[in-house]
Length: 161
Image (cartoon, rainbow, N blue to C red; front, side, top):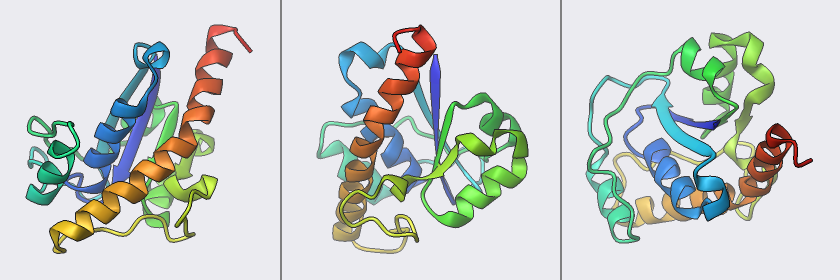
């Protein structure tokens, strides 16, 4: 299994939405070969997804009702084949936790999708429903840019490439 870990701060908004988005856009031939999870650099354990994150994903056919936050650990970083941080600070934190896995840790905006910045994807916490929709759309745009990378990595692992 190819493991993707998505990281934000509290693991209640951006990374759970990213997790749901990536699962929903994985092509059928990859979905049984890729696992997707999320964690937060400053997450408390066991918190549900933010209400606007729940509403935003539900309106698009994705479910976050079972999501519970968890703290990013060295083991989570090391076990992952690809770690996508929402902000440069998340990337730096993950690399610090597991320096041996640093080559697998990237900023979600690294592939330069429209609206991409070196700052990553901003946190909508405390914002309006529209802020969450905007964040969702930005994350989705960036996740679509990562699909070819994930496909290539899975095919390389399977010996196709």
